[in-house]
Length: 402
Image (cartoon, rainbow, N blue to C red; front, side, top):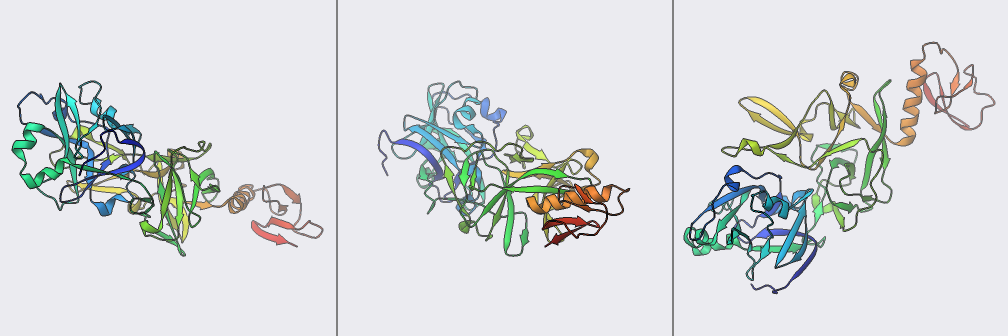
């Protein structure tokens, strides 16, 4: 399959390897191993190595993996791939070879020049085409010619697939195991902007109050446009990724001020013989972090929900990390005990009532009286006669006066 000599690229794509596994590139790290940096590429030498930061994943796993969403600009004579807050030019430069560009060959090769020699990108797991994931490799042309059988050479060819919300799309996958009524909830943090459909809702945490029952206020993003690098909570009507497609935005809306949520991009934990220095993961600290969960059937940020964490068992011990492209809430260590049972998430009206009740309950001197939802005392006794219609707090409970 030939490609136009000067094909132009500008937009969101995925890149699929043409090997038997048909895996897709996913940016999972920003680091390059010393082995990759120190290889001496010289004429006629057969050499290859892995670039661990570029993982390859199965086609069925790609649709909800934010790391597979690549913003590609340039042409066949010089491509830049932006993803996960970094770009491939920076990553390639980490090999220590100066300013490197990614080029595209006439048959779909992706390659660059190191010390004057062409170095090709390939699926490093060609011996195990059915495994879930692999790692991208870089190899000299002499290694490819000598080391790969004819039917294996598809592993150096790549197809660029433009995101079209049909065959190629990005969707939200509820992974925390939270269903309340007929709705599913999850968190997401992407470095690209997107817009959700009318069947979904997006929220951020605007404020919190831990003086009584710990609560936090959910503020809806009513235009449904999520700015780049904005951690949010998503409400879905389905757990099926294909039913939760979002539209990627070339231009990001203005950032949201006051969002209390935090986001995490990478969760790369070396396995087997991989270089331990490549670890790029945010460890979960139970005393200062909370993850999405539920308390008595109500959405909350909780201390314990392994479905919302990446759990790795090493030597019989469990290590817990914030997953890639997920959101979490931080707390002060002093609030650890009082929030251990969970921080309930409330819409603005519900939040105002809960905070007002907490204020009234906290005042031990107050035995009687009627209060507004903002905690202002309007009557000294509990007699509601003469009050304007509205919602009040009487004896610590919300009551509607008509």
